[in-house]
Image (cartoon, rainbow, N blue to C red; front, side, top):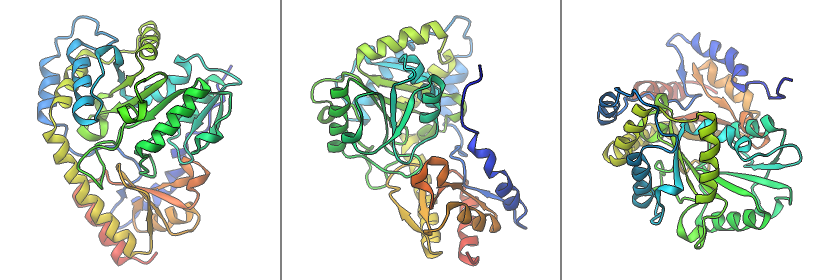
Length: 366
């Protein structure tokens, strides 16, 4: 029996990519958030030093990795009281996002809540198990059948950041329903209004003394340019983490040992994260200036690697107009009906490419 999954949305962008590539000066691809800058040398060195990996790696993560994750949450996320029983590594964050309904044993009749502007993998994970997806940003709307709530702060695609007050209200509602609540936080270090990361769902002011049914999901792809390593982790309720660990052991879901060693190096070094953030800040400022001067409005976009831009027209019309300038962006409709008049503009291009896009926007007529 075939799974009833949606079509892969990025295939719809192919003709616009062809149009952008036909530009005399070539394409500037701002559609996908894949890092373009080098992986830090210290991380690559740690990976290389661990390549004699003859034994199976631990699904739970090496002791050094679990301790590094605990220390990172205390140091960077304001979550001081985790132990190694509260954390496990994952094979990137998308794997965990898409598989969580399966690992939790959800099925038909269960409801998975996702944001109004949502990363597509939340709905795909629900579809795999036959659960129903509810799009809602208001905790009071979540029905009794809710078994899993996805929050995404900072948000992809819109860069929205939830306050501690909202996170606390959402956690209280999910617990009242007996639902697991998970916040996808992988852009937390890229807050453009602060030098500090955005609030975590595990912050003590959110959890109010209990992490029951609460998870934080994270990835090192963005802050450390480790997309090719598939390096992620989750943290939260120890009972829930233990149940997920048991399932993951049965399924063989374990990051390779060299990747685990590289993750330790990445988590313990804040210098490269700050340097990478400044690279993205400069690119962001260039694109914000060029887009607003060209008649766009930038909504939300407080954090993360994207600009949520609109000209108050159908998103595909905007995609087509930008493709004529050789600039490829993602239509907001990929992320739900709320994005029908927006496009997502990624900051993940080289300085040269970003400057080219800004120049084309300044010289072109949209």
